[in-house]
Image 1: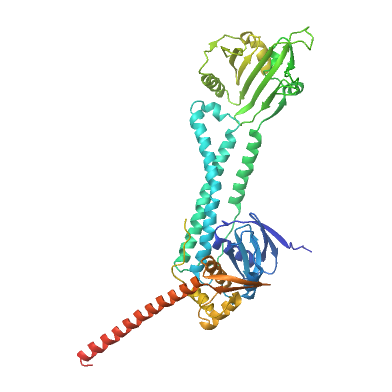
Image 2: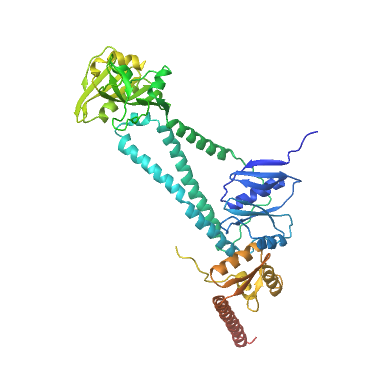
Length: 400
Length: 118
C-alpha cells in the first residue's frame, strides 16, 4: 500500500513581503491539500489533508516579540479565523474555512495604517543593504586605487572570486530591498485610496522556487570562496617536512635556521617555535599562489647552537599561472608596485626575467628580487647575509 | 519622521469611538455595538477592530483600563471625546450643506415650474 506523506516542506516561491501573493499561494496550496503548519525562514511546512477552498490572511505583526495576545486571538477565532503561525517578525498567518466569516479587514484605510507600520519597519531594515553597499563601495574604491595600477595582480588575488560573489549578492540584496519596498508601498497606496486588495481565489498559477534556489546557490558559493580566500598553510618547517618546495631561508642560507627568541624574556618570537609561515591561496586563474614570511637566526655550520648568529628576514610571493600570458604581466606589475626601487636585470639561464634591486635601510641591506620562469613568477624581499644575484639556481630548485 | 496623526475618521473608526461614549468596552462589545447600531451595515472585521484600537491608543483617544483573563477593557479619553465631537460637527455641517443644497434644488424646480405654468 502506498504510504501517504503527512508532511510537506516547500520553499516559499513568492516574495515574502508581497502579502497578497503569499495569501494567494497559501490558498493554492490548500486547494492541493497542503495546509500550512509553520514557517522556518524561506522553508514552509505543510500538513496533508483533504483539499479545501479556504482563505488565508496575513496580519502584520505589531508586537515586538512576535506574540499574539490571547484576547485578540479569541476574538479572531470567534469571527471564524484560526491562528496558524507567525512568520518571523513579519506577520501572523490566519486561515478561515468558513466562507461566511467576515474578512479580517473591512476598512482598507484602517488596513493601510497597519501596512504603513510594516513599511516603516522595512525602511529600518534597509540598513543591511546599506552596509553591503558600503562594503561594495570600499571594494570599488580599492579597485580604483589599486586595481587600475595593477589589474592582473588584482584579478589573480585570492579575494577576487569573493569580490565577484559579493558584487552579485550586493546588487541582488539592494534590488530586492527596493522592489520589496515598492511592493509594500503600492499596497499601502491602493488601500489608502479606499480600495481593498484581496488574493485571487480562482487563480491557476505555476509556482517555482528555482530563482530562490539560484540565489541560495550564490550565497553558498560566496561562503565557499570566502573560506578559500582565507588561505591554508602553517609553519614553514612543517610544510617543508611534507615535501613542499618554496622560497625559504632554508634554501637561501648557508647555515642552520633557528627560530628567533627574544633575548630578554627568552620567549619565542613572532612565529613561535617556527621560523615563519607559508600560506597557500586559491584563485581559478592560478595553479599556485603562496606567501612566505620568515625571520630566523642563522647559525653557520659548525657553530654551537647557543651561540649568537645573524638574523635574516624574508617575505616571498609565488604565483604560478594557468595561462602563460599572465606571468609577464604579473612580473611587470610586481616591479611597478616597487616604484621606489631601481631594478637591474641580471641574465640567468634558469629564468627568463631576473630583476634585482638593493636598498640600504636602517636595519641593513634589503634585496628585492622579481624572477619569472615560464608560468611561474616570484617576488622575494630579503634582509640577510646572502647575495640573491647568486641564488638563481637555488631559487629554481625551490620553485620546482 | 513625525508620526502621522488622524485627520479624518473613517466610518468604522467613527463608530468605534461612538461605542465608548456611554461606557467602557472590550473588543467583542465594540463589534456588537457597531453591528447593532448600524443594523449590520458597517462590518467590522477583527483585524480592522484591533488596528483601530491600537491606533486610538497611540493617539491617546482611548486607554486600556483593565485586563481580565482574555478580556481587555478600554475607555475614551478627553482627547478621544473631542475627536468624536469634532467629527460629529463635521458630519453635521456636511449634512446641513447637503440639505440646504437639496432645498435649493427643490425651490429652483418649484420656481421654474410655476414660471412655465406647470
